[in-house]
Length: 121
Image (cartoon, rainbow, N blue to C red; front, side):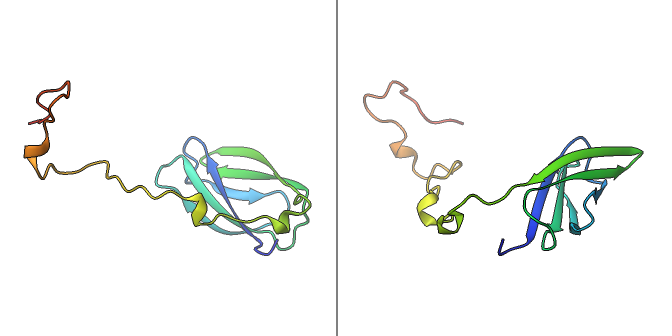
């Protein structure tokens, strides 16, 4: 791959304070960041010395625990270089606010609406 870094998000009970170890010594852990919740851990690894189709184990150690997580790196599918990534055509911008202040109370009630008084206190 062009970029040899991979960020792995690990989710589990109170994993944010654990230390990741890789079973494959050619995989270098370059950064570990706990998530906002104690149940998430971001592990950044360098795969520049690793071949595709590699299976390895991430072991989380600490707090008297030894959690083993199997992980597989897959080969790219043929023709994947021609694939287009995400573009602005893939995104929809939310233009309607989910919370707003009622600026004009005169237009709250519309004739014919079932709710005759839409104003809330």
